[in-house]
Length: 212
Image (cartoon, rainbow, N blue to C red):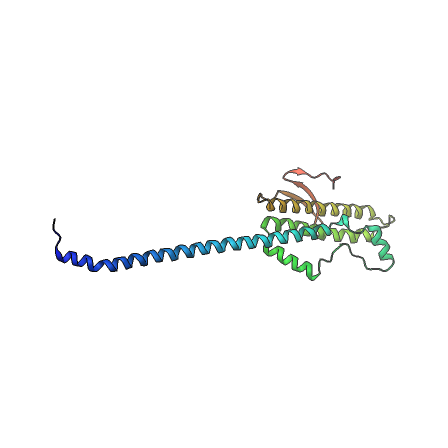
């Protein structure tokens, strides 16, 4: 078969343009791939930084929560004596209105998972009830008060609620730090004047009221 000379000339003339087009196409594909690769790398880096910041917040949060556990604070007897001397009485070991605490709460709201945030709010609510119960118990500390027994029971129940909320919060953080994500357990509570007064059950399992 003989090719028409005109076709041969046309192919020869088009060859440089075809090569240039192919080169441009390859270059374009390379640019697209590199951009996607760069974007993927940036996403991985951002996720890593996000996780590192979250882990830092978890550690700081747990440290602060444990320091605020009522069982590690002053006793009612100590508060009564201090109040009798005219000394300032604080129901918590740390000031939750301090700039440091407010900054931590901001980081918690911005960085932690939804599961941890919900348990932190449970703990926060229990702390609110505890401060009310502690104030009421201090007011009715003397056994001559007709509300003494009632307020003492509310005080002790509020301390247990804070402690159990802390346990649930710490357990969820540990789960996430192991990358074993789980749903927040089904928690049944009772509420008091200022927050959660008792954690009744977790995933349908009753909480022993006599156990810390």
